[in-house]
Image 1 (spheres, rainbow, N blue to C red):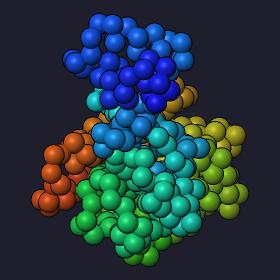
Image 2: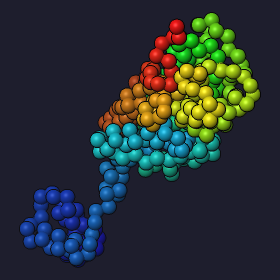
Image 3: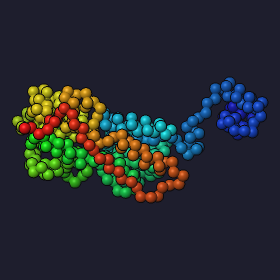
Image 4: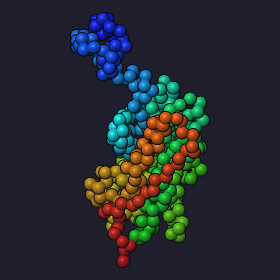
Length: 338
């Protein structure tokens, strides 16, 4: 802008007025400024303008990983909603490590954002406080991190209980839990969904054979396949499989086909997440729908109400739990046998 002002023989304020369409410059002055702009190839620095206005229109999305469908789909939903409101989403992968999460919330990394959507795995609210995060934050995930930040989570326990009950009601009595975890008092996706699995058995009066709880390194398609193959090789019989994610359920379906077991006649299968791919498998996958669209809308609503408030909002923070529903397809029986 200084170069344009010097070229046109006017002040920087006059250049700013002309570029922004403000009154006060004569037609001749306006023409000289615009000619100088054209000659010098001047472009407005949109980032600087936004920072001077106190708003970058950027939202940071901090997630553990992007190699599975859940977070990539969530990112797409949030970005669509953000763009409709004039914002854009910048995605950072933390690797689910404490070091990665602390780096992502450091002052220099957070400064460009108007707000953060953060799915923490290793750190807690005290870490956020120590990092001096001053922009509005909405937390995702299963860990209740005190009442300092708005928090959106899915009903992992209720959804898993419904998924397991669905197979129990259709005659399954030996349901494998693919990716299951012992309940060690620490809330995570795996422990909460494992809790729902156990709740369903308890309510149905069906004991859990602990040999059917098959741990997995993660919840990918490969992990689901390997878990079912290990279970088969152990010689433990099963007539149902609840996989903690749809990705793991897809691997389980492939493993059952490799073994020669029919789905759902020999083994019923239910996943969790309602990934779009599940509808195109053979057989189509029965799954739990955690209402991801409503979740994304709620996240953006909570974040932007604080970002766009003229004064800091000091009312109580909001904790939203999204209810899950079952989507019945071909991988489970239509009704109880007989």
